[in-house]
Length: 215
Image (cartoon, rainbow, N blue to C red; front, side, top):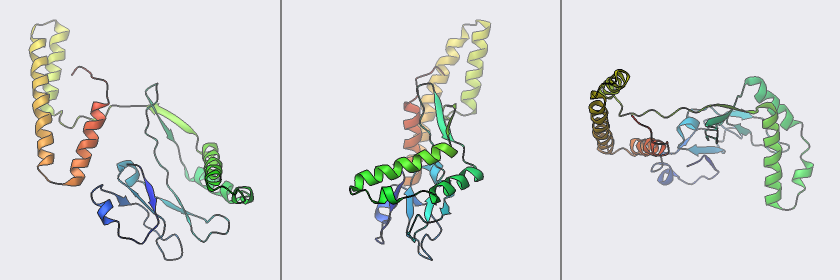
């Protein structure tokens, strides 16, 4: 579930609790009122610290800036990201403050106005915080413990020596990993904790999206 903005005084605990949603905006955005709230269950975003920026034009609401991490792997196996510094954030804020918003505000269609606003802001962010790329790494396998590591090392050692025992260690490793994975899942389901359960589902989903590799 992606991050989304909620502007309501209604009680949202019935939605936030089952999906493990947390509000990451802890500061007031209009005088002493906490009006702009951003709820998310994405762990990388929950760890981020939003910043308060100056209002746009005649608005009396402060803007909320979140240096969100882009974690989509492209066809080359790289993850795009933005390098955001204090200087680049200040440059973005200054460029936004210097914009003439009359052209956007005068647009009659709300959808066209929203698209124009998004395009304008995106172009400014791309200018000062361009997208870069880093090599994607495989997510860790939490049930791959010390015994699995010893079996893998023994298998690789046997392969280097050309010993027939390599197939024995390979089969033993596969059997151990299946058993360890079942135990890892059972332990988390047994805790009856929705947060732990959702993290487990996220981990299993990420592992299933990988290309199958030999242990």
